[in-house]
Image 1: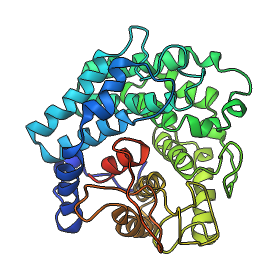
Image 2: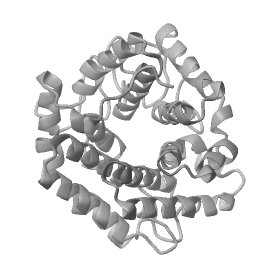
Image 3: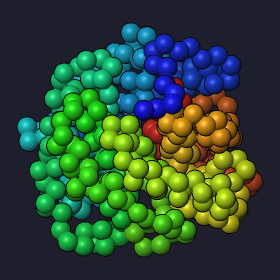
Image 4: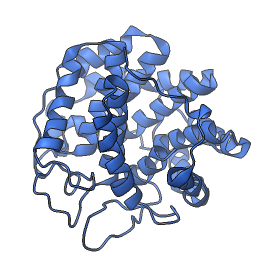
Length: 354
């Protein structure tokens, strides 16, 4: 049972600097994005061998903005993204952008990552808008992944040189969300048995090594899935990794004074504030985990950490008018804006703001 409860986004109006940035991000960032060119056309054609665009993350951003603004135009754009994705879902359930030869475990490293956020967002659209087509599509896509799980070849992560926990970022969170909105025990069983989420025990891997297991965003994403599952399935085993991560961040030099973490996306304890500090996905998910911990424990310490990352690393990653975002936000040295209109960081930034 959580100590604190979240006020529904549709019941909140935010003023001040945060409110200003919410409005600017919607107007100057999302409002200037060509969603067909940069995202949806890839799903219409489905001729990619690999790659990632982040459609599900953008869908989630529009769901949040639609709830927050209660603006019919924003809701219309949300529906356009959702309905286009559903329309181009294959009968078997596949809802990605990769050609049949390369999808899943056959070459496209980030295919499940892409689909996972679409599943998550479709289940969110059902949660908040009671859109049964969205739920049916989400479950169909989840069943597609689960039914093909046995096709994963032995040693797959060594073949792609990326740990499965990294390649499947978002998959556990999507399944937790589906379990939450449906109560279907099949999703819980998959999380506990196939993904072994309850017994996950990975030490903090510092530095970029083979399999990039020290990837902070993927680590934080799994922590968030564990903490969300804990609300539904209160096993103490689900809390161990969070304790380990925050001990490193707070007591092991894992977090800089700005709240930014990591170098080149990976755990780091050098306190080097230059270069590739504070990947935006890691910042966004650190904030999400802190929010969950505030709800769970009621401890304002996690709110202090969240505030530090929010005002420094997150806001520092945006241009002053919120049109552009950075992949990294160093404390000193040159800061550059990301060239990607759609990708993991740009879309995670869009969805964390509202």
